[in-house]
Length: 388
Image (tube, rainbow, N blue to C red):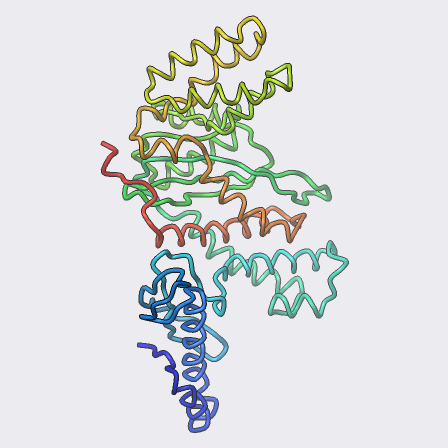
């Protein structure tokens, strides 16, 4: 069990080094890092343990064991926890995988002559290894094997499946193209959010979505009660082919956006948005159907295209009304995927244009692995006892 330095034991670290030389470095650093994390938690909470103060921003919640591999050897650390879970010591590198993937992307850019602003010495310091085609290939292969195991790991029962795609610029055959990054999220039978898989392809064509969905099934995905996504034609066709009997919820947020394309007058946009929200917020499916019928009639003469669009499309956003109220709020849109996309966008912006598809898949996968781990350790997302 690792120990934390107390207020009077900073000298212990010095004595360990004095008595054992470099052999005592790992233990000494462990003491110092544990103390640094303890101090940082106190600053985060704005209070020491058991201290009564109006400035307190939360409460400590013990420690979590963590073994960190370093150049000095293994460091057995005690990572301070807080009750709200919104704390992680800055002394630790939380995004180890994504940082490695990001560094590899930069290294590949240098080797391929894409990055003209970075010099060799700076890139080597950033990446931690010699930036040559051989070393980059070796480091990439090592990380790709680790990430491929995650992408192929067995899945199980998932009550909800959320499908979404985003685009990243990737250099292919000497040209820069927008490649589709297909991502599957889920909520398992225990109510925890999960990241299920990812694939990078040239587009969102049906064949790519179908191959991706079929891979999820082959890995054991089962028990679905609802699929949430937008209405992209390729995704829609693939979903019907692979999951024909699973109900579909069209993302209400995207529906709201799509409606704007059928409005002829800018002055009507806010009132139309409010009318659609009234349907989505109806207390029951029957009431939603009644309100929708009134809307179709309301806009039939003044906005015929909008009226027809509403009649044909809005019902696709009402499937969630057959589910518990607590689930409706969170599963009526694909916001879960949007939050993940925001984090991916923050990291991929550093690269700009990926040197190849593998580099793009590597970085996105690394981010998703870390997201999935955080979700597994986090709070319950949905109370599944209400889903019968």
